[in-house]
Structure formats: structure tokens, C-alpha cells
Length: 373
Image (cartoon, rainbow, N blue to C red):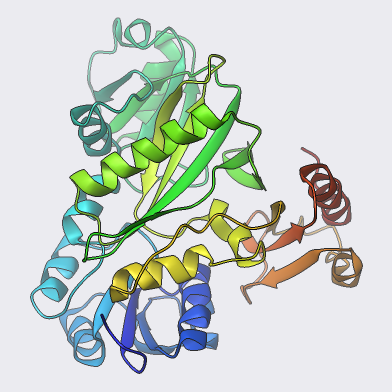
């Protein structure tokens, strides 16, 4: 256990590092981070010790910190190896090697018996004859690395479309068969070096254009489905000897069964509602796991909804923030990022007594933001 007064390092300085640092400060811990962006949100609340992953920057972070965690997956593997030789890195670099590469991620899930969408791995120039049929006749071609928020993805429904998409992306890809789901879900698990486990509640998510727009707790799923999701999370955390927090994105099918869509070994957009739902937040749980503090389940104590705030079109005015903060149960979180259309600039959590109440509140927030789902 690392006691208060210790320093936690973050690889990355975006809004996730900002919110981790805010929670760390309230727990009595100091923080530092590495981030190339000179306007990184974490700089408002944490100490920057470098602008990238050069050896001098990594050495400075390792010398300053008692433990290091992450806010995004795409850290160079050699940087993680350099740090792991000097200071505990939680989660370990090997987990990021898998999670950042969709093909390795799918193979690892299959090896543990966890169901996913049917998939095929493709490289530029591969013959695609019969490949689409093998995954069900239609699907999504995704870059094996670096894709997020709908980037690096192409929907395909014919071999001609698949061939064109593969040529356009021109990098190793994974073709995922289309999953006819009834809802998208996520669940989180934290595990500390002592082996303790803790689980979040099951959250229901709504995407538009590949970007998460709304998360709802509790999810409209059965108790059996939630228990299955917890078991999937337990299987991954124990098999991979997780030290940190892991988010599973899931598809629920008509019969209540689940397919694992993606994993993220860090706090996640869908977990932001834990900030205001009562009880421990996902940010506290990632910190507790990295610091080897005691863990406890962290489902919100009240129904809550998270609504993402995206950058608005240039020809539209800035949202009326004062209208949002007047809404009952609404909590506004802005990251201090420069405006750009479509960019994640913040979120609003709405908390209430019932699921119906918070959904109504979320609809009011979305009306102010001009969101049409």
C-alpha cells in the first residue's frame, strides 16, 4: 500500500488524467504526467514533467513517482518497458500490448472462452473473396491500432466495399461481423496487487456516429445478464493478473447473452457518471488499485445519466451553460479544452431518484446542447 503523500504518475494528460488527478489530490496524493499537448487538461491540476516519451522525459517521470498508471492505451511499448524497469506501472505494459491491437485483443478474448463478434484479420492487399461471408455477410472494417470514437472504421456490406475500404485504410485491419444487439453495455472491474476485486454497476450506452453520447445507470438489462458481465470481467482480471482498472464494452443480444466488443485498461467515458451517483468513482477505483489500497464495489447509489458535450458547429452559438446548471440533479463537467466541432469538451451528469427521472433530465440537457439522438 502506498500511503498518502506518495506521487502517482500518469502517461497522458487529457481529461481522464485531469479527473484522476483531481480525485488523487482529494485522497492526499500528488500527481505528475507526461503529455505532448501544450494545452493538456491535466496541466490545470497536475505537474507536467515532460512533453513526450523521450528517454529524458521518462526518466524524469520515474524519478518523481512512486507508481505510474495510464489514461490511454497507445503508449509506445518501449516507453512502458523503460518505466517498468524503474517503477511499478499499473496496469502492466503487456496488457496494453494486447488492448491497443484489435487482432491481439480478439485472440486473447477467444483464448479465455469469451464470445465476440465473428472476425477476420486482414492486411493491405489481401484477397477478400469469401471473407465477408465468413463473418455473416456484413460488418465493420476497423484499423488494428489507433482507432477510437468511430475513427478508422468503415461499414461494409459487399466484397467490393470491403476491398475498397481495405485499400483506403491501407493498414492491418480487423473485419468484425455485424452484431444484431438490443443494447450496448459496459462494466468495469478493479484489481489491486493484493488480488482484491471490485466491480462497477452495469451501464447502458448509446452511440451516434461511433461516439458515445449517453450512458445510463441502471441498465435496462436482467440480473442474469449483469451477473454474466461480472463473470466476464472477473475472468479477464484474474487471468491477466490485472493491477488497475479494466472496462469491458459489451453487446447484449435479444436472448440476453453477451458479446465482448472492446476492452480498455483504464477509466472510461461510460464510467463518468460514477462521479456524481454516490459512492466511489471509477477514478478513485483506478487510483486505489494502482496504490494497492483496499477495494469495494463501486456501483452508483442513485440512478444517473451521463451526457457527452461535443464541440458544436462553427455556425452555432456556445451552449447556454447557465440553463444546464439550473436543471435539477445536473452536474456540469468541462475539461478546459479548446473548442473544435465534434471534440469531447465535457459532460453532464444527471442524478435523481428513478431511471425515468434521470432520463427526462438527460433529455433536457440534450435539448440545451442541441443533441438529436
